[in-house]
Image (cartoon, rainbow, N blue to C red; front, side, top):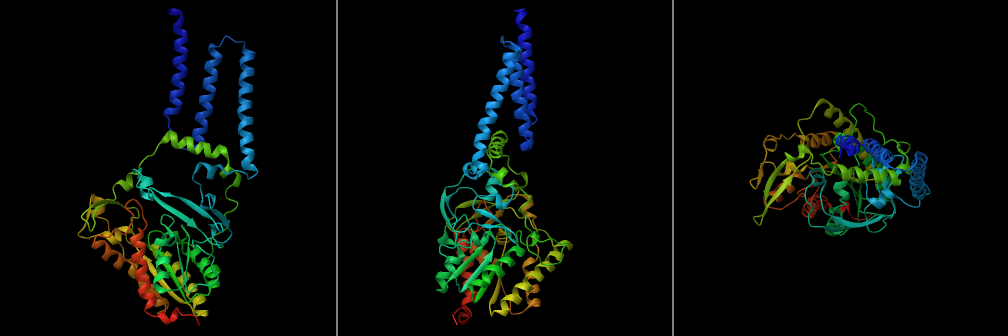
Length: 438
């Protein structure tokens, strides 16, 4: 038995080495590559140590196997190089920028936009907060996303529209069916054509570009600008006081690398090694909601907004300049401009009798006076700009037990979309002659 001790000792040393390599964890894709290469070489070293084959034979096998792997991988990569196959789309891996994602293209002014006539079908099973917290999947909700010739979420191509609604994901709402969108319901209530010009992730600068490039071309009588307080203000650069378009980021990333097999296999491997790690901050932001049927629903929150800071005041000045330009170009064409304030989930539920904060952070979570700030700013800018705070109608519905926000997401439910659409309809219908065609 003694003669076998060196063999087992060598095996133990190699195994310990491999274990130590992987015990460091995987903090990045580069770290994963290092671990894979180290593991590959350790396996070959262990094989070479105990194999009875001549050293040249082992070297030949190592070179041959390594070259075969490179050739196979290279052949698969040629499909991505030629643009015949996008492994990112195939594997469903995320991109680093919006334009890296399936269904998006780069745009020199907007940074990115949706592909023309893009269509995507699938199921919504978990919200953005649910993903961050690794929550169990919800009951799948089917969606069928259809985009028009300009890349916006409209089932048909539109050359004219009575009303145009611009904004971000609160307007586009890719997690809901088209029939539930506020633009669809607004069209039905007004009996007028309504164009949805919302794109997820857009901020005020991009939305101004959308207004000038797309909204004005539809010759609407009314433009509704949905401003989401959760991130729209904070997407503005407080250091730059000039209104500018989003710079072209086409040179920031290599198209091939994003669709390559190597990158996307590494991302899948990294996810498999790391698993899902819940974000600790969001676990502390939750509360219990009681609906009209007496059922309890656990609500999770994301956007934690505090008092407005000096840098936020600078952002508000930039926002003022953006809306001033939007008002000027709209007024020149006789277009009515309405700004609708979309609140964060916490602003709607704080203090309701049927909502119970479950953590100290939730109970002590302050709110700022951004709605009042925005209303005052618009009034000073131009009294003709109409302001609608969607907080009261959403809050009244929530107080009656209506679930207006997705429990594990930051966005509205179908009911929330409906309530927002009803509130906007009441404002627009208050002056119905402005909707009629000249």
